[in-house]
Length: 471
Image (tube, rainbow, N blue to C red; front, side):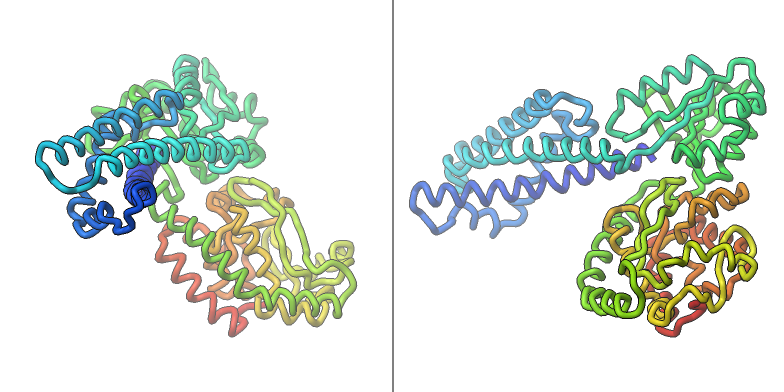
């Protein structure tokens, strides 16, 4: 994950810096035209009529920024250091361009344009670095992109990893809990440190990663804990200093230069596909909210005319690794639905922790209609925009349902919940066994790809229109 994350950040920086360089050329040419009252745009036309020349300039700036050390881990440096790196790269770049123009008598750009280009490229590149740093800082403070971590291992290694995580703040790792093995067994450790059940502890603390920092001789001591963490769906990082010769052909990620990890995951790792999924979620939710806004108005009026009470139904649901959030739906039941739940428990048609009733008397007529066509689910697009849900993913359960999950069923919480999923396109209420439902969710998690999301969305459309399995 770490190397993939750094690689994607580096590609983002190169791409954004290239755009800034192009924009700086345009601004410099435009301002030069304003100053000398020459609106022929001769300087900019030279560049944009020669794409190879323009590409060479952008490539030169990227090479200079890279060679001066901007790209690998600039968030670990002070802003003054980052400013100095950008200044050096810009100064050398302008000097090279000036040399080419002056000594080779190449009519590429005026000296004024070149000077202005230097000022603009330095200013905009530095402003981008400030903006990225501030955006990441605010997102980390809000908990966005932060991964909660447990560290289990030998005292010396635990301290070493803690120091590295605190040093590499850009990775967004939040240490929730650490515990040292000392001479205790796996069972004693679980009883003493995690209250008897590490999976319940991980669910309560919303744990994403578990780091095991042990030497080769103590690896067997934590084997049972590793298996339980795997069943939960957390990403497991195993300190792998002793694996370097044993697994020479395997890729081992690094937290720091001298802290290698062998990583085990049961969910998709950080990749371009996941970045595209996030963009697809945000863009899709925004577009669908705009397109369905007339339907929102009609549905709200229908609910108000059918039953007294609020238009929207809000409820606490459980999301990614146990994180709770407020879940939105159009209200389809009478206002006293929660109070009448006990009288219907004997009619539950599902096996397992989920509650569903055929011909639920708590649903008013218009509510039954919007349920048939899944219109009641549309407000969850707001949950998608907030980053709490995805367009495709396991459906978000209630806290009381999660409390009854068996160990392996908790892994369905290891991906962000979604508006639609395999369970919905496979028939929804026709699947009465929660074990089958959970198996479909795990099948989705284990085989996830961007293409699978697209297939599920395409299958959801006829499933909704034909009311397959709707209750």
